[in-house]
Image (cartoon, rainbow over all chains, first blue to last red; front, side, top):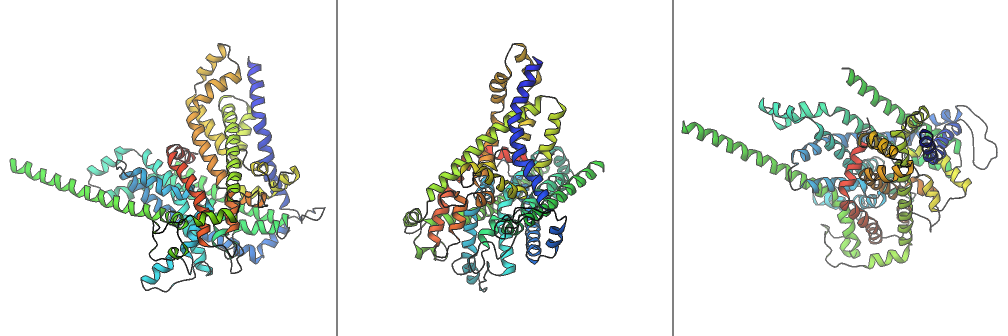
Length: 294
Length: 290
């Protein structure tokens, strides 16, 4: 029986093991390997060049531009999403018994699940300089209309708004789970001591939800660093080339690989992306552990 | 005596009134905010039914004065939109199926069988889970190329065969909700391993797999970067890629874009509203990783 059991286990896990090795482990390893090689699709040989790709990246204005844009977008989304999500989740949790809770949860969450491109299309229309309702709204209030999607600073802001709009639903949902797990006795005690709603939010909820805040922050940042479709749709340059107005890391990487045929160089960009994600995750674990010790 | 109780009662009433006032204002704020959240999508869908003149109207109308289907007719004539939807649908359904199968069986084995190699495998799954797809998609593209599956559903599928989180989620549920005694009892009664998995484990995992399935479906349905590089012919685009490339053209007008977007949005939003509870359960469980 014991032998039969293990034969089954081996046979059952083997397909996943093979698939996983082929579509995850091998390509991840290949990214690391290629980043140390010079490979220009067409040429047969891939000479090992050490860290030369990374050295070149440090002086590549297109990459640095993409790096700065992506970082600004990721942190911009973080600073809008986290406080807003925390407050919204607190309010929704406070009104748990209301008939509208289903409506609140659904409508805040819908932007997170709809396809990126149609959603981005809606915002592209909103921000449109000639046809968009945003400029129409500004003019009715006496402000001058702006070329939202063609100004280098404003177009980054537009992407941050779009990404935050999408990220918010996920953060609210995770926070709601967090609020439900908080001990109600603490709030009752605080109420007896005369604490107001906002006070118990600041003094009890926010500190207790810190691990969740940390988790949501890392998830938001990581997905912010992988931003691509949003910039692809929103930020076409004046010639209509998608995503050129605001370069982001993934765009730069794909251009290097499939337009300039510099796969090794693109792989080194991927490694930079990986390093960013690893650092963020390590910070998260470090902070969580410190909290556990304290 | 009676004045005291009267006063406390009055105070209590005042407090209740104040509280219901606060609750009411919270409801108002939340309702306004939620309407604002869905407004872009509502306007997009309504634009799809508008004539070019009405689309420029300020303030924008939510329900078109003169609803028209001409945008839909035009976009269906311009683009193989239904083909793209079919491509996305078959890709998303196949991906969901693969992820459910690999997650169910692997999560079960990792949850109920003890062996050093299995622990190593699980550790590798966890460690690679944080690596974003974008990091390794270029080498994966060349693997797809050498398999000769570019520009096909199989090529798309290659990137979405397994989901680390799915394996993790099933493993957690197997550990927490399927007692060892149940499995041992079945073994003593002479049940085969496959029968146990099929008849005992799978039915108990129905809720988990439902949530995971919806998560997997939406993940594939909304994927962008991978389909963009793998499916590069007009006939093999997914709906996301097709739309994104369609909107970069110069001649495209807003009405057609909105109509095309509406075709994608309406079914997925409907699906989501119907399956909301399962979906929320699935997403909420992603937050419980630690």
